[in-house]
Length: 374
Image (cartoon, rainbow, N blue to C red):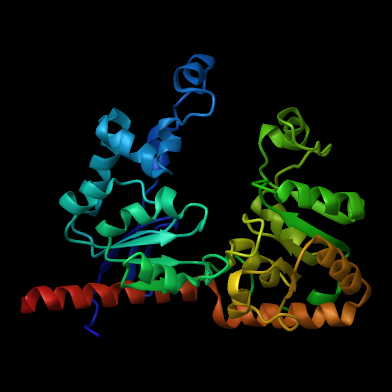
């Protein structure tokens, strides 16, 4: 591989700037800041429809982004202009959380940098903010080894015509690699879930709350100031009479460090995607991970079932396993310890970020070599 220059400049969305990251100079960009002054007034809601999109929200959908671009929205075009000016001469562009730049702009205004697109909310968002952009990128990464019930992500990437792809496990950050023995054992909290209420998640979390009461800690940034469970009943869904409160990062770490089992579930109601951030955060903090399964059983590419984590088939199975491992501390600790070791060894966020950047650099070298020989 060609030696990287002294300064390899990387524009990146979703990570902080870092001028000395293993030979890479990372520069972040926050497109949302250009739209933070958008008021959600009654007049605006009526004008765009109650379930429509603000300009800021439009950044997250292919249709919305195209509308901003075609309509030459003033805030959007100012953001795009600043983006192009900042990153025009960079080596790599890694749009790791979402792509806010119209593909026609990427193609025509940013031909120099090697461009990498991230697939992080799939399969639900694949055609909303992923596949239609692929033609303007040099490669793409995915976080879930599985795509759906019958396809791995490498298989679906090939079907989409993407020849350069990389698995980027989004490992946990801001935790310790090494713990003392007592860290796994001295835990007084039983069960925790910190996350959203999308899709069918609320019904499953409601069941855990009904069964375990105060032994199940439920937190997250839920809509309606945490009263989403009350409001959903007005929309024809079962009420969930419980207010879900959010935690600061410090509060989350403190909770995780004292809990025995971390519960995880993904957006799809059937086994499809796997590998959300929570899947790595739980064992990284010394908890035993209890998670739903993936399509094609590809969750075992991340953790081995019964050894480094525990996976459940449905909520009946999940409750049985919660009861069992709360009653069998030695087995729980053994799995929690092995899960933490696996994260430390193979899924540490800094290691994975460097691997992804090295892979992107190889794509750039190959492209430059081809251009030279053409």
